[in-house]
Length: 465
Image 1 (cartoon, rainbow, N blue to C red):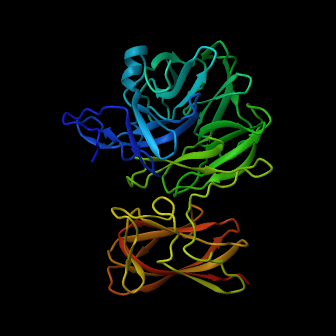
Image 2 (tube, rainbow, N blue to C red; image 1 turned 180 degrees about the vertical axis):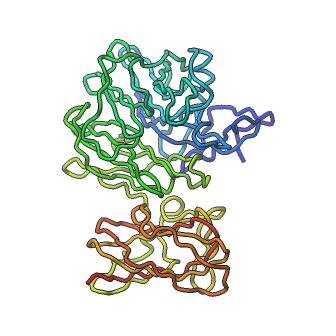
Image 3 (cartoon, rainbow, N blue to C red; image 1 turned 135 degrees about the vertical axis):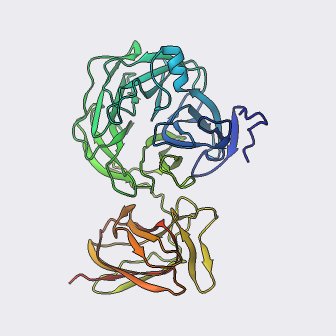
């Protein structure tokens, strides 16, 4: 039920609701090309705290029904004063606005945005990537559009685009302590950065240049500053369980950069895109997942605390729940660890498990989890002390003929897809041999790729000589 949806399908803003991760799904949203109202799907969150002290999130909007990423449109802005009650301030810009006000662009194709505030003139600048011509996929004529307002949540009007910016996506604008604005964009392995003019934040001050020193850059540039150091975070080119978010550090806002590794592991969504923001004296990481929809093209924003080490490096964001009991130790010296399926992590939806259409995994009489189906996942914290090889045995019962699953470590597939014959009325042991689990592994995910099955246990046996 969407409380703000009227009988005539008009949605009246602002709307404030209490919610937790994943965020914003409870808000109403128009469906693409129809008069229907559905859940709100958001991605690519850009977090900022303005002078009023509220946390604002500028996000791209995945419209349902999806068609790849073609139908992203209608940017929204959200805010909170307590990280519990969130306000949807409504649509602030669409491709129709750009076409009507500036005479360029096409329908949809409005990807990850950012916003910046210029205290010199009291204006908010909203930067967004948008396609100007419908060229074949991968060859689009991307522009970094700019819209300007006196308000952080409404009345944005287009002011053209940043001429000279490379035809890349995901703009980010960072304003240094001296008031100098810097702009970045990138995608497909390229990342560029440069200065904006102090007297005109819609124009470059010189050419943008490649950012040097980044490792496995994919897209999603974000720049922030902490204790005098500059941080550039981005998504990588990770595998089947989605992108990691990595970061690099520098003494300059334009690099060169030194890669420092991963700070958010894959979430199971095919993509990830983050930002990092300080709010009320604490730091937070924004990212996105696809759990509520079960579709990579219909994503939802998440937020979790972020912590720094004493040397300024970032600790991995602990968004994987906590063990159900004592932390299981992965075996060494030929031993085995038996993980009971029902002893999955604490923490609830998005941290410890995802169960389609239910509040939690279903524990059957006899001590096993039943009814695991496509896109479900269950998480188990473990303590790994060294890089070692293991045989992994799943005590499992397939209940359909097309059952497939895999095991991931820190969000990375380690077993490959396992297909089972079924259906059957009894449990059997399925072993995958020679699986490497590294010393930095914090958790294991059992992820269902298809079908229907029950799980009783996972046994991990050390096979190192």
